[in-house]
Image (cartoon, rainbow, N blue to C red; front, side, top):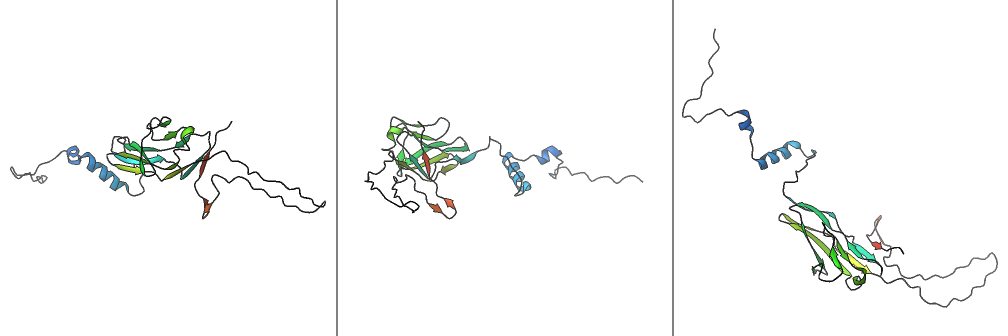
Length: 199
């Protein structure tokens, strides 16, 4: 007995056979969506660098930065993204342009703001960094810069204290106020960074 003949598509019916490679060809974007869907929530997906990506902050300034007279102010800000993000800063909620003052610059390849120590007192205040490209804007938390003078011990008259041998004695001590007083929120200390150069 001969094998049954396979039905052939009728001419003009619009039915045609596609080679497997052509049948599986998908637009690039749709292929990526299917890859993400099939990978599941636990799959590790690496997005190739040629794909557009919104900015994402990798470095940002501390909540509070205390600097002393010999210290430059360094507020870090760096973000990833494609196209590469453009950076801008605000001070006291107003646009702040590095380079508008001699001694104020940004680090090459990032948005890190560097303010010369001689300007720290005049330019202390609240700062915020923005990293933006065509897909969006990443905003850093607000950073407060405090420029402190060198701590000075208060002048006070010391009165001699006489005690008998073996007796307890209490000696008063009134140190200068700390530029960043210790305080805690729950079990973690509040963010406060102090920079001081040696020498």
